[in-house]
Length: 439
Image 1 (spheres, rainbow, N blue to C red):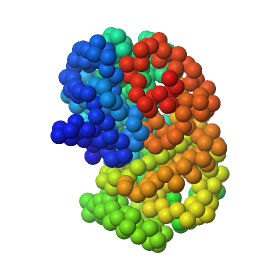
Image 2 (image 1 turned 45 degrees about the vertical axis):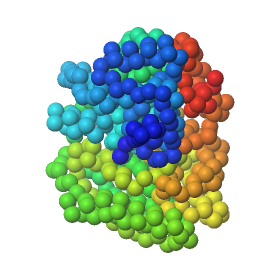
Image 3 (image 1 turned 180 degrees about the horizontal axis):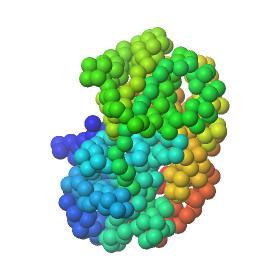
């Protein structure tokens, strides 16, 4: 589940298969000094530089025709500070390796997204998040960063050291430098009880404020062409551990959510008229279940059915209205949508370009099966989200540009001014950053 580079012609492709790039050269550094040297050499050769992790972004945020830095040797834990309750990891460490290593040490992140294939730097730089009343984004759990800037120098930042850089670089879009290490806050490992339960969309929207307030982590999936959702509530638990049984786990998570779902999407792509009835069956296939386990085994799940995705953060109070409009649009449009719509929340944070910067947010994510035309659906959805001052996930498909984004991010100018100072020659520029941050 990662990006690939074909040695034959040097073309890099992302996980979703919708972005490709042909870098002039690839570098696989093993140390922060190697990264600094690669940045200096690129500047001498007049080439731009991008770091790319596992290619889980659906945008071209990591694409470059210059120097592509692959951080797969920059992995592992540098150190654990049990007094400060922090862990420092190399930037190329995949989240799944970090989660497993922390669990062995009796530690955990507070919250995480539902996919853990990404590198820690790729996930945080694009604003990857889970769902939560008090916590959501991975970047909000960062306590320190190490960054190689455009002149090849190594900058460390935290709330105390270079705080202006720290405010922006936690969700830095790859625009401020190459992140080489991240220090996260951690806590003693805990148990979560997950309660998954089907519920009608009308009921979820009517009771959304209560469901949000009563649960530490609430999310739901709505199946277009139906009035059905699957809800998930995760709350801390005193135990005992009661993990999903091996057989039922395989049936629900692999067979239904990946295997049958893959086949259903193949059928839907070939014969779009079958999608509403498939959606009706899908929405009824998942039954209620409760299980208790360590955090990463509850928060995350395998995603083997490949798709493309758009996700916008709207003010939390606008969620019900935005989703009702999305439902009406799908019903009216004649579109056939085979993937559920995912809804999560995040509390306001203090990161300059975080999608939850300065406001309590709800996320609405729309997906299409890979290889299916998605433009008409995504464009119609985006028009709804932007009417509610939506902010796009930086790593997911959207058409917002700097003019629109400056209007929905009060601190947008603060970020671009810092970028002017740290990267005046635009060494880390690419077409995507030109669009979203301006020239």
